[in-house]
Every structure is written in C-alpha cells, then in structure tokens.
Amino acid sequence: MQMNIERTHWGTVPGQGEVYLFTLFHGDMTVSFINYGARLVRLMVPGRQGPGEVTLGFDSLNAYLRDEASLGAVVGRVAGRISNACFKLEGRMHELDRNHGRHTIHGGAQGFGSRVWEAEGGVGTEGPYLACEYLSRDGEQGFPGMLTSTVIYTLTENGLRMNFLAEAGKPTVVNLTNHAYFNLAGPRGDCLGHELEFQASRCLDMDGELIPSGRLVDIRSTPLDFTHPTAMGARIEEDDAFLALGSGYDHFFVANGNEAGLKLLARVHEPVSGRSMEMHTTYPGFQFYSGNHLREGLPGRKGETYAPRSGFCLEAQGYPDAPNRPEFPSIALEPGRVSRQKTEYRFFVE
Image 1: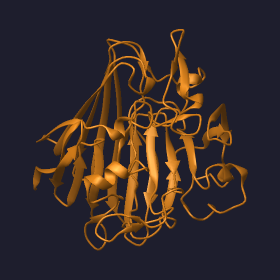
Image 2: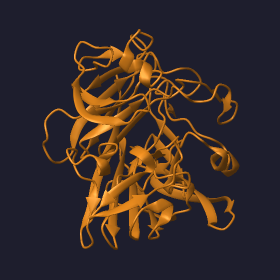
Image 3: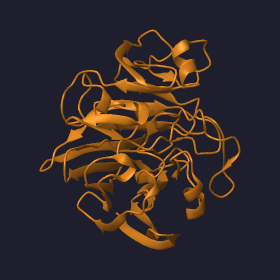
Image 4: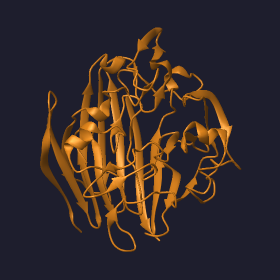
C-alpha cells in the first residue's frame, strides 16, 4: 500500500518565512497541509463513486492570507471566545486582542492560524505524518508565558489523526483545535442533507454575543437535538431563540459522561456519496458550526464557489471562555507539564 509524503514550495509570508505544501498519501486517502497556520488544505477520501474532496479550501497562499473564516487552520492559543478579551490567572489580569467585538476569538487577530509553523514530515508504522511546531512568545496577543505548541497529523488507512501537544514556560492557558470545514458530498453545494448523530445531549447556554453563561442546557427534543440521526437542515430554519443566536448552529456540545481517553462524540453520514465520518476525541466537547457566515460567492479551489452552509465544522476542544469560568474544566497549563489532546476523523463508505 502506497504511503509517502511530498513537499512543494508555496510562497513566502513577509516577516515570517517560507510556506510549503505537504501532501500525504495512504492508499485511497490523500491529505495536504501548509505550514502557514498548520492548515489542512485538501482531504480526499473514498466514496461510492471513488475518492473525492471533503473539505473547503483555497488554491493559493494569497487566498489563505486573506481568509477570514480560518479554513483548515489550527486556532489558538485559545480556540473559541474569551469574554471581554481578558482573564485572570494567578491573581493577574491579562488583556487580550479584541477581534470579535469586545471579545477575543481564536486567539486574536494574529492567532496561531496566522503564523508560519516549522514543519517536518515522515512515514511511521500507521502512515505518513506531518509534525508542525510553533513557538508563541510571552505576551503574544496578550497571553502570558512562552508556549511551544506541536500538532502531529497522521494519515491512517481510514482517517486523519491530530495530536495536539503544548508546553509552557510559565502559567498560561491553551486550547487548540483544527478549524476544518467539511462537506462529504464535495464542496460544490450546501451540507444541509448531511445526517448528524452526537453523543451529546447538552450544550452550553450563551448570550446574544455567543458568550457562555456558565449553565448547561438539556437540548433533547429541541432543534439542537442530534442524539438520533437527523439531517442538518431539518430544523435549522425553525423559529427558535437558541438557533437565532448563531443564525443556525454555532454551539458548544458537551460530551455525555466524563470518561477519559479517546471517545466517539459525533457521526456524520452523507447519503448521496455514501460517505460517513466519525469524530473521536479526548476533549470534553466540541463546537458544531454549520458555516452560517461563510461569504456568498467565496472563491474556493478550481472553480469551486462557497456560500453560507457550504461546509460545517466539528471542532473538538475545551469549553469556550474557560479562563473566566471556574465551573468549567480548566485549560490552564503549568510549567513542567504537557497538555496532550487527540482528535481523529475516521471515514467509511456505506
């Protein structure tokens, strides 16, 4: 079975360095990344009609430099929203970059998705891999402490594994995820026909600015209930206050139970292509986003044009606004310890 990796020069980010396209092959699976934002830019997986593209992306570095939707990026230092762009850690208040109204989202305007990472590929026992590393300086975007972050992507026989590791020079916070947009039918239409099933019967309550209140909401028998297979578009336009907050789905779902280790949290099936995708993760929950704010007419790859709900995100991560919510699982990281999280997307044809 073919397992290898190729590297191509893709351009330069002024003041940061060279950008390369890395393409990994494993049987019928192919994936490409760039080291700008450690971004996933292509993912080809089998379907009833053969291998096909299942993510949204661009053809050029310039398009990624202009990207406002974090397509395929590793977002951090803290994924999700931090209220009022500040938090207190060990008695000291830290002011962050305000890039989402009066709040911070995805680490600030120059978060990890806007940085050139060091990257090195190879082939291991389970498949080809790409290891990306970024050194975030003390005070970058307002976050305390130097932080070394590593993301190891492995293309397995039937999926994509992402190992997230982080080490800090002094107390800080960290919450890394990948912001890929999926469309299992291929990125030339909407994704509303995808059938979703989540191992999550609660989500975080939030206010009109999508900031968590601290309360968990039971969403069974509501338009957010995906505890049984349900089409994404079946209830997305219902007159529901919770749906209206995100103009569709943009909610953090909390895993049922609190067992440690890798666990299945979401399953997606696209009936036309026959493709199914499972998300397994060590994180305590995930942000489900139905691509509500993708720009109409956004040019993609080779004639693709995107629009609202052309793709969806399943972003396994820690709770949003955790630094300001002591009742949430902590995302604090102490020196001498290593933060370790894992997410796997596994693909099947049915």
